[in-house]
Length: 260
Image (cartoon, rainbow, N blue to C red):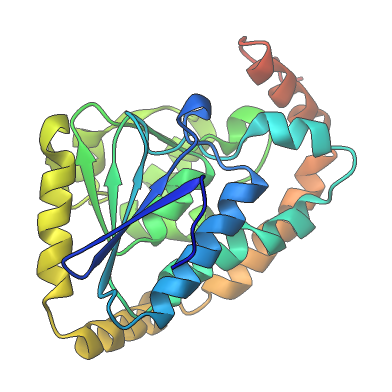
């Protein structure tokens, strides 16, 4: 198995726990962690002993999404389209096409690209008090990481539009009511209950689970790859807009953006 300081791996009872490990940055994704997670998933897919993957965050937060500090430094130098094609697009496709069940254990914050990653997992368990946020429009960007397809597919177009346009955070109970998560549990039992579900799946019929996931992808998400490519295209437009520059400045200065 691939080892990395930013992705902690623990294997137990057929379940590979992958822990996002940048707690000092609210487990926000930088390029290193994104690539490390892709490598860990590739290794898990090839390893017959791994029958289920459990994805979680270190500390009290799942992930705040993309590390905006990294993107600010690269804003004038890196194409967001190229960035997505190297990072979130292949990551989302891995999560959906891996013919093994993937469970996300969510707590603290789940925002932006991390919401897309959580939505790309097969099952989601959230701790009480978890706060979700679409996030992108708050910094003058359009949704990426599959959110433009996965969020409306799960919660419906009207709710997805309101959550995206207003960037209003929503809690675990609201997420449960919209079928965005499968279960809400006390935070102190999140890992135990997530592992119990993951072990149950790991003991199930693996070929049949993989074929079922393939069928669901064909029936509901057959255009996922093309949507990810289009997200990268429109994000390259948003990248150079004044709204994005103001959104990032406001975020880093801890103030509300002034979009004009």
